[in-house]
Each structure stands twice: as C-alpha cells, then as structure tokens.
Image 1 (cartoon, one colour):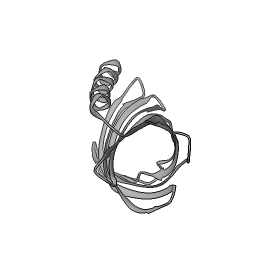
Image 2 (tube, one colour):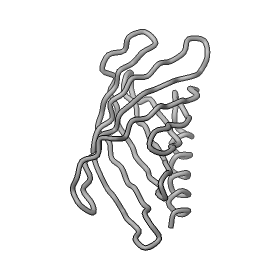
Image 3 (cartoon, rainbow, N blue to C red):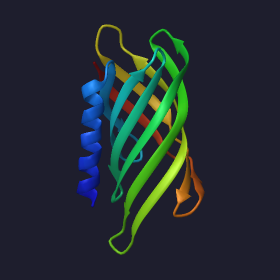
Length: 145
C-alpha cells in the first residue's frame, strides 16, 4: 500500500513538473523528511506539494500559499493546506486526514538557484478523530529552476 501511494504521488508530481514554470524542487526536514516541490501560480502565489516519511509513516500534503510581504530576497507566505498520513505500528495501521495552514519565510539567493525556507504547518485532524497538531516546523532547501 505504501509503495502504491508513493508511485501515485510520483506520477502526479511528474505531471505537475512537466507543465510547471517557474518551480523549485528539494527537501524539507523537520519531524521527518519530505520531498518538496513548489510551482508558481500567478505573480505571487504558489502551490507546494510534499511527500514525506518518518516514524513508520508516509505522508502527502499540499498548500496553496500567498506571498504576504516580499522584501527583496525574503518572502513571507501563508495559505491553506491539506494533509494525508498513513502509517503506524504493525498491529495498527492509521489513516489521518487533516486541514490546516502553512506559514513561512523563504530566502532566494542572488546569482544561484538556491532557496531556503523555514515554515510551520499547524494541522487540524479530521480522521480518525479531531485534534490539533502544532509541532510541524521545517527547514526547506530547494533548487529553483
């Protein structure tokens, strides 16, 4: 099941990459690790899709972010997000669905295609039970192309 979900995420990611410009691809490290892809939509909005792993689980999340205050090479952004998490112990497999937000700060280096970001993804879980998670802080390193 995990391999199937990763294959589906990879196929969808490649479809987005094929039609995307400009974009950024890299990793986000926090509670676990994530492959991270950003695609610019319009002048100051972007879609971020992450496929992650950690603590016997895999996850897929997406956020539609708005640039709040671009300040030179820095950019503050925020937007709504959704998340799916599958995993758990061998005795019990869990499916967690949630909605939330993404708040962050990114820095784009001048002269090299490197982007750094620091963000927070608070999440309100809907399945299997309602709850709030605030602990998803992460550092992103992406190649912009």
